[in-house]
Image 1 (tube, rainbow, N blue to C red):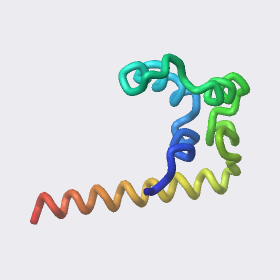
Image 2: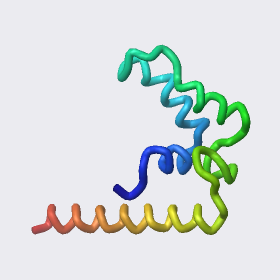
Image 3: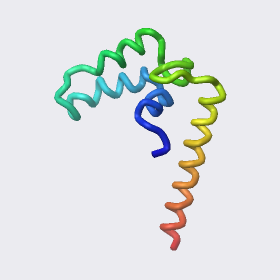
Image 4: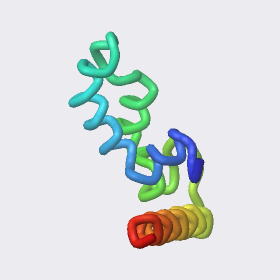
Length: 87
């Protein structure tokens, strides 16, 4: 995996993750509400990479490193898909 679920949540933002949970959770799980920890982090302004803190602490350098790694992974996957379709 390029990144784990907590790192991914921080990347897209915990506020967005919370909204996704509110929208989809009833269809995916028997829970009726998003996790309290997620709600507390959003209320505290710990929104992920954009805020420098979410589930993890983010320095600008670390955030850039993770974003670059994700970009490399996506470019590689797109090239592999293109090559597979053009065989």
